[in-house]
Length: 237
Image 1: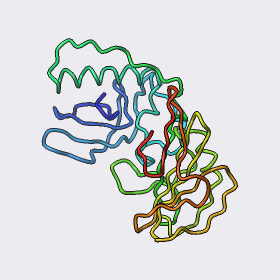
Image 2: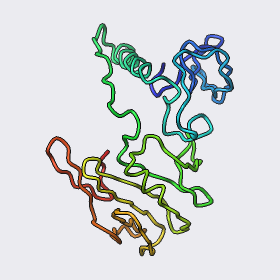
Image 3: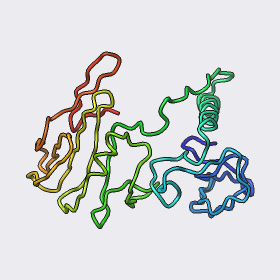
Image 4: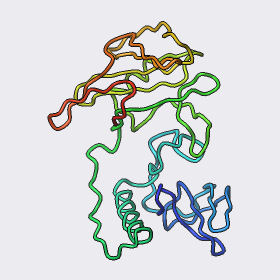
């Protein structure tokens, strides 16, 4: 398994990286990028599946879908083992460290619904979505299994047909329950908005100004007894 989640195989002596395949599988692959030292393939069919292959819970997962997740087709316990091996390989092959002990990956208590910040783009029809893998194409989505349930509720309540909207971000404080929707627009003034949920609505305007239409200009999160104030432009996830 290579860094980034692609399986690694060889064809006629050349390394081939295959997203959404699993080591040990026999697969049919279409070569989509062929370079001197390596190639990249698109998975066409799994001929002999791995025992570690599982059905991805997200309908948008896969080579033609959202590019945000890369491991949903692999059982979680196997994911941890592969990631441990990747770290070992990176240290040895790139770092030139020999016999470095790498402890097992620590299992997440929440492998799903953990993201406290998601950013949506809009397709040509104004539908919210995520970027496809290695592409500028927007994949409209109806659900996201790594988005926290606090944000999922906001996403389900949104009914946007706003040509002024450029990008939408949703944030939450998992331990405080506070939520924020950040509307990045092509305009220099905020547009009218009706909100039926307790969520702060902040606009990032085309002239660089920030305008708070509903709620507070920041939300808070508490981690290890420390309180953090998170604004629309903060990096916090």
